[in-house]
Length: 317
Ligand SMILES: Cc1cc2nc3c(=O)[nH]c(=O)nc-3n(C[C@H](O)[C@H](O)[C@H](O)COP(=O)(O)O)c2cc1C
Image (cartoon, rainbow, N blue to C red; front, side, top):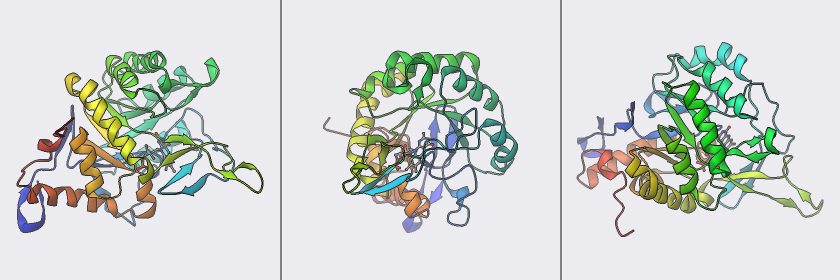
């Protein structure tokens, strides 16, 4: 229970299947570091859950600069999954995560199915880690670089392989929006054993330096995030909720351009049980706590007792 304005008590707790969060506001992978990098700017004990940046089997330097570019109402990034790699993550970062007081989810990425399985196996059973978020937006180098998450069969094979080797592990599958119909890949992930779905990752985009007539970003293309993508992300959450997740009883973590409580409420009403904030945390880390408080204020103003009452209550669709 949290105290919202007017001193009324409202219940912000969320059950993502067997994982319980004190409130629905989480960090989005890649925007809040490995653990406590944001501790001077935000009280991390007040958020609902923490998601690390993507971890790969081997450490990665990432793409050449320039790695980020501001666009109208958003940003492009081509970080290229720069990270310390599994061994250093286990040695240096997991001890820090043990000090986190909220559920922690480690985002997993890879260049092949075997990479994903190896990383997931090593991270399974660690007490400080409540679950894994599988980032399927990576190219499979073994089959010509096709992104796992754009192909429902590849998504199912990947999630199924991780599920088989990590039967007890709580698995969130993070979907890419770069598909024709996201309900198809959502269904593939659920049928292969996902405990939860998170959506959306970034939209592939490009910015061009017209003087040089070259892409601005070192990685040539980048991922578009921020407010520019929010209406599309809300629509995708709404569809996945109504066409896949609701019947399957699989919770959704919604994200894409959330900056304030109003934005988060859109996702929750569309069907998300929890939300994650990425790009706006880079600008304003304090928004995480304000979004949580604002959801509480909305419940009080609308005479509701629990945030669960709001999940998927969208009318007129
Ligand atoms: C700088 C940056 C780095 C990101 N790195 C990752 C990552 O490592 N793994 C991942 O699954 N998503 C990553 N994302 C995607 C975000 O987690 C999120 O899905 C997306 O940005 C949409 O949310 P937003 O508009 O609130 O940022 C990254 C996004 C940004 C802006």
